[in-house]
Image (tube, rainbow, N blue to C red; front, side):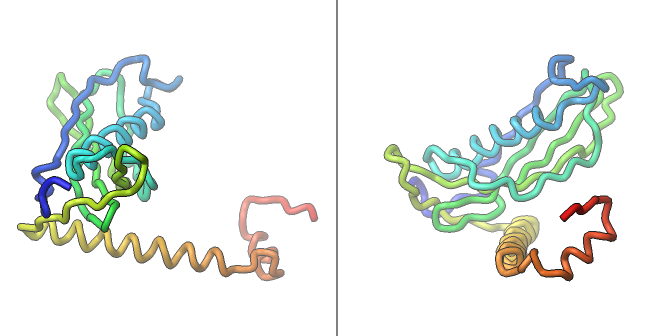
Length: 181
């Protein structure tokens, strides 16, 4: 482990890339999968920079696509550590696209990726703590705690539910589904 605590600024990573026709789908918009690949790459870079170790993706907790990205736009991904556990880190990523002719910029995506630090034997290793020095850091850390709590609660509820119960079959009638049992 490098330092005992690191600030989000010490591990921040920024990546800018021009969107090419090869990144587009048939409607001329950039593939969401391509953006997800960039998100995973920058999350790895940011987490590895913070931890000083190789990191693996544990989960992609939130991916909100807000605006399409066009061919020819400059996409900038900004990643920072929002939360740290013992061996894991939540990387917050903001994706913006800029029309390079007009200079107009738009927020296209926000994502939160949980990364885990590993040693050379693929064993999890402790990561430096997070040095919080402003209200933005506090807000991001607290929101990550809340997302983690909600995710755990949701998983517990789904695991404990009996989806064979008649009430669930009845509830399906309100949805666009045909049930043939």
